Length: 417
Image 1: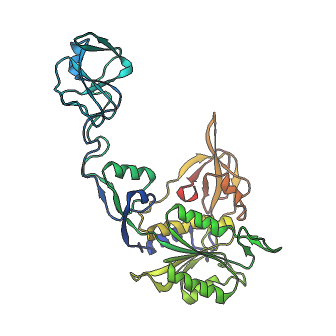
Image 2: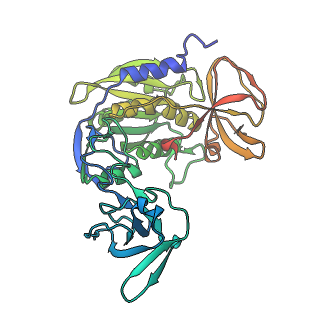
Image 3: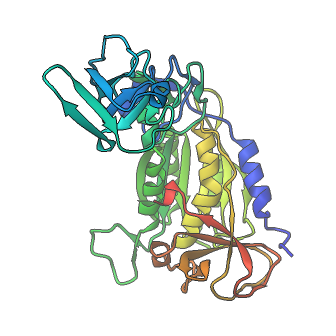
């Protein structure tokens, strides 16, 4: 059973999804800057791609119906990409054609050059073919990639690298996208020290802020780093105020548990309102979400996400709870992740009560593919992420799974790449 004070994971995800709407306005940017940006208006194809029938091979273009009564085809010209053949088709004729060149009217089939032989005389050249010919082979038809009027991308789509090439293929040089969501990040705790500095005997290096920043920048958020804030309420309040003046969202790491020095929740309740705290997941129980009194230019209360201080808990809660909400705030259409079901490579158990995200790797052998839970699942063992490629997702009420049991598996996505 889930403890009464813990919000079930599914309810937390639903609450975050329903509570957040896009915060950002749009801008028009050059195409080469648009990778990983979110489309702000539907993009419609203005013409067919390819815009004409063209050859997918270097070879010879013929008319297929001639194959039944011709063994030798008279060569009457050439077609190159950018330099089409301008003559007319004649029965029993062929042309030399290069990859990408338009297939002229009257021709409809291309035979690759390796399957052709040429005989030359002073008067003419004839071509014969050494393999079976199929109608319309090696011809890329007009519109087979994109048809005019097709909605290539709808508002809220995130543009991948290959999408940029697709937009280039229809001549689009500038794209209307949403401006990046501005996210302030900070870590709290007297024990923290920045990498590159010499740490004291009772200090540890701050890993969370660097991981959080990398994950956010993988998704093209604009990150504003406010560094490490000591366990001092006045300094924390001042940092939050500075962050609110510059960002739409604040993400803090640490300071949301029940310790005497965990001031973040107290200050959030002074500057805004806590929506919920403690989610029934492992790792990552102390996850806080709230609204600030301070608003965006459109009147939306700015948001707060408080992540746990343990490194793995910080990653999992950012990845599974905060990021879907942040992506929606940024204007993206967010789909529910698709689970795969794979057999376990080894038995696994847990205490009932919380949904558990277990770092895992994939093993493939002659007997098939299995998912393997890795050793070292503690919330402070960040190194396990480097050797894992996804999560086994164990239901809250379950306790034991045996080898070869089918379990839900969630591959890592772009945020963790």
